[in-house]
Image 1 (cartoon, rainbow, N blue to C red):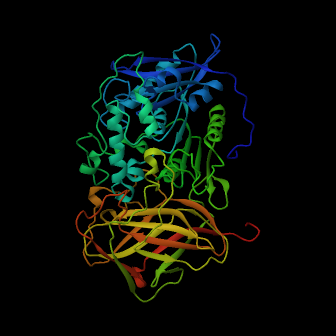
Image 2: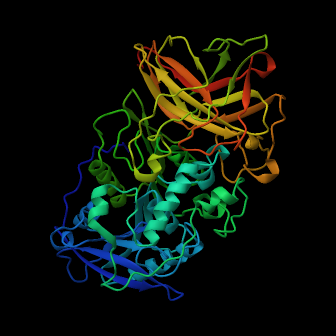
Amino acid sequence: MSFPSTTPLRRPCYKGYNSQSFYVPMRDGICLAVDLYLPQGLKSGEGLPTLFAATRYWRAQQLKAPFSWFISLPDSARSFFCAYGYALLRIDMRGTGASQGNQPHPWPATDLTDLYDLTDWVIKQPWSNGRVGGFGNSYQATTAEMLGACGHPAVTTALVRFNEYDVYTDIAFPGGVPNRFILNQWAAYNRALDANRVPASLPAMEKWIIKGVKPVNQQPVPSHHNGQVDSILRNVIFRDDYDPELGTTIDDISIHTRPSTHIIDHWGSWFDAATADAVIRRFNNNAHPQRAVIGPWNHGGRQHVGLEKNPFPPLAQMQEVLRFFDAPPNGRELFYYTLFEDAWKSTGEFPLPAFNRTTLFFQPGGGLSGEVLLEPASDSFEVDFSASSGLNNRWQTELDQRPVKYAPIQGALSYTTAPLTADTEITGYPLVSLWIKSDQNDGNFFVYLEALDESGRVYYLTEGMLRALHRKISTNEPPYRQAVPYHSFKRADALELLPAQPAELRFALNPISALLRRGWRLKVSITGADKDTFARIPAQATPRIELLLGGETGSAIEIPTLIRTKAEG
């Protein structure tokens, strides 16, 4: 199998579609709003596979007059899949949009039973061939993955793109650091939707023409009283904390606790929050047939980060998905894109066994090299809480699919290698060991990895972070197989810093794949804050940090590398 495929796409077999809106009752009497789209010209007795698009972001929108008199909003997936012989069911999940009920928190257990009941309803319809799948980006991707965990035998496949495997580490608390931006902004967005208002963050044109959620046959839209995720900022520090406002722990709503049993096509990006890490962990923990894909995109895949034009645009991506739905794989394969080489590759295991771990030590004066510094030394800085990676980083694209373009990284400390003597591929998880002393008992630590070409142009590669309170590396069994040091983020493993006492913070950066050319350099920057995205810790004090260099407590970074020979390059 290759990716993207070179196999010609089959011809569409239908033109146009018919639609209808109605309510489907669940086992407890709650009714869900659905829009059904069937290919126009479907013959009596002809059965089709059905695809679910189940969301909490309104299955469809109602336009204000006079716009509703002469235009309709586009739906590329609806037109595309119906043309190729699929039925499409767009669904407002329980407690959202025009559906009845309430949603205590994202992805509640009732979603599993509702998806089961919807599947049961579909396979009894005369247009169904008895096969059901799901698709979506982000939240809708998780409902598609939950479809495969609902236990219904008719569920066969799902496309899962740009979603989280572990909500705690992938988006809410990466490295244990509270993601204040996404939790606050996502909660505000959902509050507006639940009040049938257009969210303030949407573009002006959409706010001008959209009235609200599309009702079912002009019936009144039910009111909703849902839990909102900003309560997590008030109630949660550790993975096992129970949020009394949401009535759950974060683990209980994560997909890693609800394993899927269907064939899965899951996509992520090196630059979209932790979705690349999510793809790798899902790949390593799900033995079922699957295709895993990691590309160089923003959230949703419209932008190829670093290029003005996306060489693999959304339509081509959708065509690749159609090939998957038409002929699901029998095996397991992970496809990944290597930056600067502009090449797609594949593997059956990750991390890649051929790569060595190259250790680079931080040197006094800003150097970064393989030379072990025998004598102890140190650098120091006071945390600058005005530091920011900007409003277009890998975490903020999760909210609204904004393009990823980092502000210049202004590290409190920065370390740079000499020019590389050979073309070098980096693929995998960089691991950093920071030996520090602090005058406070807690704090956040951010590490950024960049590449510099011969002209000095800087390319963001990846980053990682760790809250010092969570620095203990656990010897207990992790909840799922991991390729990096295991921080449990549980309350029992909390470990405060002792002021002026040395402590090691060892953690992984998000995975990356890039080919650095001879003459390029690597740069590592360290800060204690990212004000536009993450919460300030500590809330009041300003820590002074000493980074230890040399001796037995020499700070370093390990890079997974493969030196390219001239023939390989």
